[in-house]
Length: 434
Ligand SMILES: [Zn+2]
Image (cartoon, rainbow, N blue to C red; front, side):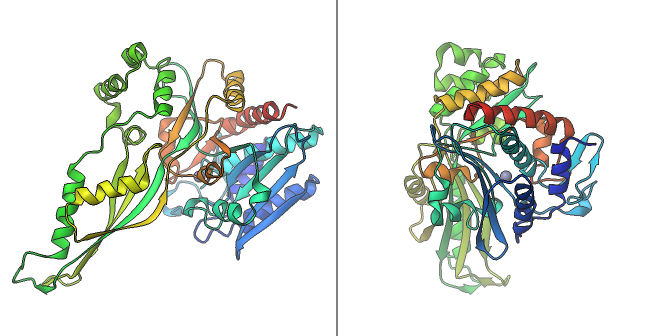
C-alpha cells in the first residue's frame, strides 16, 4: 500500500491537462470527487467551456483573514517520444512518481490537498478560513484562470495570505546544507512589438531605407547596451542570508555594499549563470522577427517582438521609453502589447516567520531564504490586489531536476511527497493555529 500522497499524485498525473487546450474540467472532477467523499463544500467556476477552477473551504473562526492554498491544474505539453516514462501514465518506479506536472505543479497541489484534508479529518477549527484553490490556465497567463477569477469573483478570493508555487528546496546548492527558497516576489513582464516600415524595391538596387535592415540596426544598438546590475532590497537580503552558506560572500557581509555583492558574484562566476543574472537585471530578449517573403524583394515592413522582464522598482513605461531611445530610429514604432510590473510581498511578517520555522522544524540544518522569481506565476494577480503571496514548496530536489520543469522526464520522489505532506501540513497547522 503506497502512501496516500504517492497514490493520489499518480492518479492526478494520469489526467492530461495540457494547456492548450487545458481541459482543466478533468482535474476539477478529480478534486470534486474527493471533496464529496470528505464532505467538504466546494464551488466550481468556468471561464470558458472546459476551463474550470475549483475552490473548497473549511470555515475558520475568522480571527485572521483567510489562507488560500493555490495551485494550477494545467501543465505544459510533453513529447512522449522524448520521455522514458509515459508523461501521462502516472508511473511509480525506482522511488519516483513520473509524469508531466510532478514538479510543476501537480505534486505540490497534492501536498496542499492533503494538508487541507488533514484539518478537516481531525475536526480542527482554524483561526482563519482555509481555502483550497486549484485553477486553470496558469501556463498561458491566467486569462481563463486566476486573472479571470479575481476579475469576476473577487469576493470569493479575499485573503490575508496565499501560498503558491515558486518555492523549492535544493540539496546541492550549498556546500553542506539544504537550501529552501521561498518566493516573496516575481519580476514584471512586458511584451513589446517593434515595427519599421520603408519603401519596397527590387533586391538588385538597394535604396538605403530597407525596413528589415533598419530594424536590425536598431536592435543591434539596443542589444549592444548591456543593462546594469541592480541590487533590490529583497535581493540584498537574499544574499545576506546566503552568506551563511557561501563563504565567497564574506566581503559582502562585511560591508553590505551593492558594488561588493556584484563584484564577488562576478568574480565567482555566478553572474554568468542566466538564472542568477536574471534576478539582478532587467532583461530584454528578442524572440520573434518577421519580414520579407521573397529573396529579391526589399520588404516594406519588418517586425520584432521583445520579451522584457523587469525587477521590482522598475517602471514598465519608463523602461520602454528607454528602449525607444536606444533603438535610435524614430521610424521604428514601439507598441506595448502587455505590461505587468514586478510584484513583492513583505518578508518581515509573522506569517513569513512561520513559513521559515516550519521548514526548520523538519530540516534543522537548512538555510531558508526569501527569493525573487525570474518567471511569472499567478501570485502577481493576488499581490496586485494587496494580498500577501509566497511561493512555498517543501520538496528537496537537485539543481539538475530544475531542467525537468517544462522539460523531459519530470518526476518527484516518493520520499519528497511523503516528507512534503508532513511539512506542508505543519505549515498549514501553524498558520491556522490548530
Ligand atoms: Zn507552474
